[in-house]
Image 1 (cartoon, rainbow, N blue to C red):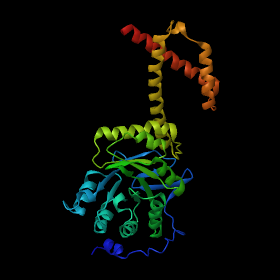
Image 2: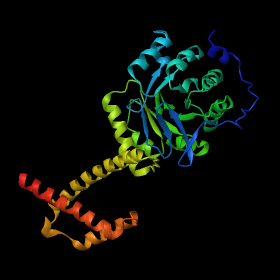
Image 3: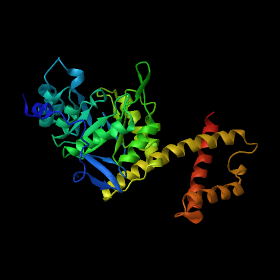
Image 4: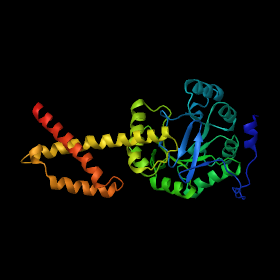
Amino acid sequence: MSQAAQLAATPPDPAAEPDVSDVSGVFDAGGRAAVRIGTLTVGEGLPVAVIGGDDARWLSLRALHGRRSAAEAVAEARAEWSGPLLVEPFSAEDLDAVAAGADGVLVGAAWMQDFQLVRAAARLGLPIVVQRGPAATLEEWLAIADYCVAEGNDRVVLCENGSRTHGSVAVLDMALMRAARERSGRPVLADLGGDVTLAAAAVAAGADGLLLAPDAPADVVAAAAEAATVLAALVRHEAPESVGRAREAIDRVDAALATLLERRAVLAGTVQRLKPVGGFAGRDMDRERRLVAAMAHRAPRLGEVRLAPVMNAVIEAGLHLAEEERGRS
């Protein structure tokens, strides 16, 4: 029996509450806990991570069980990807292979209340992602994190996996995910699988990362990354601590700004087509002054004086574009 399996063989006392008093292992990011998985750090004040994309990859040994050995699968995954790698074990027998090649452990939803496996996985000392079981309550979910802490591992990330209320379709509970984040102070992920329809909603609800299927196609990865980039810049405050990180955060804000400017140009073009007098001759300077004043309430550090020339440039760019498109039609 492997060392990891021996650790799992000793069952916990179900009557005992885990002692989480003197255990640490996370660090603070913007006043909340953050967890480092290899070179990726997940938590509030940080970018929204896409796991299953370019930020990190993961491998399910549960999906491969019986077809190949855990050691071979992990070694192959590591050979193909040098970045952060999470591995979901099928059983405690897989944990030695996980320890040898992974940067973190993913405890799948079906295994969430397998206390022996959770304890053994936590004792590896790797970051551990705990998916919520499909019928688990918030308290049951958070209790699993406490068991990890009791084993000396506080590097826990929670992952909302959904409840199976409609046949085989798992429905993500965004409110429960947000409550878990608020109650525990831990980073949370939203498991989207191969469907990114709710990617934007998950980011808006406070997800620190999006978990995609291990074999998610390129278009799914791109859609998740777009939600993590554009929407997160609007609803998520980042607290970078270096010039490089600050510039990366600016790039995300600029991506959101470009998206909004493009949308504004389309709407402005619609106005030009509907107005009796379009183009520069039809400019409503009073409306533009009110627009700048309203924007100043949302951007008080810039104020009306600095915003006025910015919006003038935006409006004129839209008018020029409308005239060019009218000339081509």
